[in-house]
Length: 321
Length: 292
Image (cartoon, rainbow over all chains, first blue to last red; front, side, top):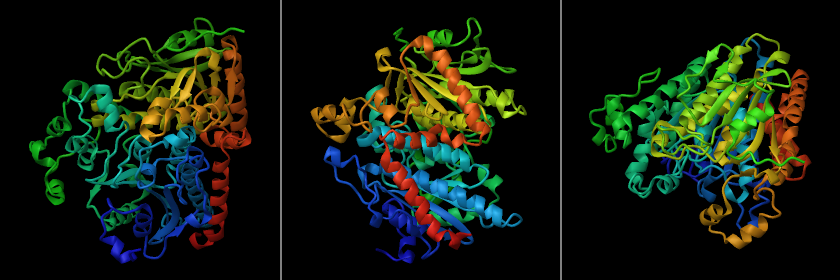
């Protein structure tokens, strides 16, 4: 495996889950919890004649960034598309549980001086959602994870990272936007319904699932940044994601939570006004929405280099439209 | 025993469950919803055995004229935000009251899915369904009992959105035509590239995989199966009382998604989950002092 320093300049998009987990926290601090050596594998896959994996497709552990304990969840797209089953789902919710328990103990121990010590959860998504081979257990796991995200609010900051090969789809598409803040690279993709299903429902003329540029315009990092669905758009390297997490953790919790896109009546009303915009604009393509928000260069946006995009882009105003 | 199929009949179910003539659509506390938004979702206030409750249901008989993929009880963006608003307005209506007086939320579940269209992805269907789930979890934290009653279809993302964040989930038995699953076997076969015969034989015995109320019961995914529609009001009321009691004793985590995990282990359908959770506790306890 690459050294921590080598990992920093590695593509986040290409990196396996464990390398992301190790590289996202301070050098040498990552400790895996329920590691492959524990051999917790899916009891359901063998019944279907499928191979198992010793981490069940998700790496969970804890490291440090500066003074802060940072709990890391990192999904592995190379194993059944990073989909969530019973064991992997339990690793994720089990990690949220220990993070919140640690928070309570820290507040208890340092009642006047806990802010610089409180834990955070960093969730690196690479998944299509529920693992169909054990679909019911995967579905129930999603509900547990949503409950933990709500329980963490105003206590433990939860940060989503999306920039891996598989993207973040299905049920995990709403889990990742339910956190305090989303960091993406332009290669990241977030959606609920996968492109093939949209094509099936709407027809190939409306949505061609083999058109990669269309998929990026609909679900990719630049679109999500314009829509304020992602708070920060970073370069495709582990270091860029890591530096952004470090910056976020310097903020007081209230500032971190100011980047939420959902989770209160006010935010629901803001989102509902965007749905109203959707019914007025009837966009054929995300480019129509980009233009609406003042991006005259909508046709060029996809081809812009990161710096040029960041220097010229106009994002949706806060409060709606 | 009264078997009555309520699939596609959310509004009928409201009338069967609530006290006669008590349902006031679109009104929650001092709030009135603008009715044209989210026609596939029905929200309002009624009485259940004399107790004021908020009801959130699906209307499968209307389609949303603004979103062509939203019909037959599908929860689209407008529907999900409308449902979320109903929850936040319920919290607002009882703010400051003691937990024992926070009104229950009753979710009548009959939806085949979330809106699967292009506009939905451009504007973010994921945010709409996520909003509703966060609102329900917040309502539970505030002390409102949340009971989901499956009267028809509880499918995949629609069930996650409208049902799975409840304290307790009840379902009519399969004789009533209820359906609980993630995906039909034919789609699972296509996506996993497994042959349908194998899947069919497994689906008769394997609860993590099979569809239907009995299997979800074994996984802890539903608390109770109801065999007779005329028992719904009584049984929902009993579960509301149980949740008030659990909340009063500080045991709210014994209900909801986490509580159903424990139930799944007790019923023998989801054993691995609990082993993983316990192992996580044990492994972190060994290194916890490094972080304190």
